[in-house]
Length: 163
Image (tube, rainbow, N blue to C red):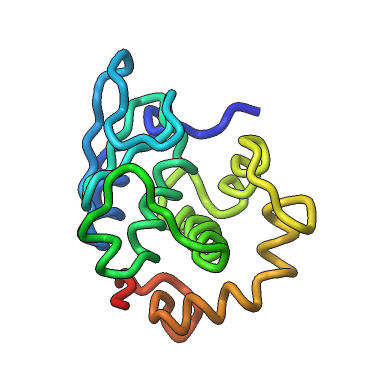
């Protein structure tokens, strides 16, 4: 199965979601190298509060980098350039939040996000993104709540981590 890419979406929908987190998006031409891309190729890049993508950038990559921005503390966010860094707990929070945010995008949804994550090679202890999301995220949910990134219904509240 081919993963969903930026070219499959209305850029305004992507921009509207990212804008809620004070993130902007720049779509560059397919033949150009993506600035701030940690993995290279078609993977999204991030520098400060700007995400760089191409039409062939996977949506899971765009949301993953956006969620790193959301989950990191202010001091790291202020000097963000390519490498989001972060620890194990934060990486889990990033994956969880990108699954939740996928539901905010027409044509994506959390189910498709988890399929795309598996297809791309994300690895989880329980063997799949769906199994992990449904059965192994109590500590991740606690981290997201502790850092005030979810509302009372465990949904994104469109805030970034402060400290």
